[in-house]
Image (spheres, helix red, strand yellow):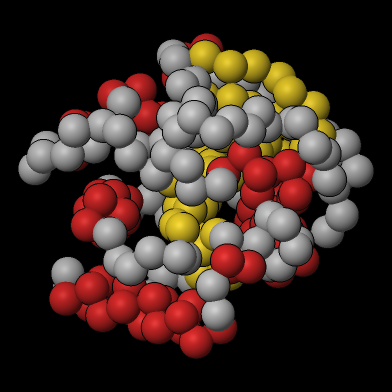
Length: 206
């Protein structure tokens, strides 16, 4: 799939105010400073669609972008600065919980993880929340150009081990990406295209 048009539609913190269009949505979320804005700009072939910043936690709202006039890319706030506790709603902003648990148009979330670091507890806890809530998601490892292939494989293996230790039967589908080198772009967009085709074919709501 090639992205020909990417249009900013709305930013808000109230799920009820999200677009009413019944189009498939793909949400991007991760810890602060994971490289989310750079990845979105790389995927959409635009330099400034999503605002990048040296200050972590820049994204504070739900941002909807209409892609090719037939699906939404949703840029969500990071969960890295929220206080972590056993209550899932303390991991990230409450309206993000509302978005994931009530937004019928969401067909898949992409959880972004900085591949440079070893498995982080907050990422494992967030993905556990997603799994327990039966929210479909894939993992997108970012910044793959920053470390060697050996370290990439080692860190992915560490995530698999931690997830299996947390009662996961298998590793979720994942992508290895680099916004700088466009690594993983074709694979990620092809995946979205395949899911879209299935959604439009099998779901009468879309």
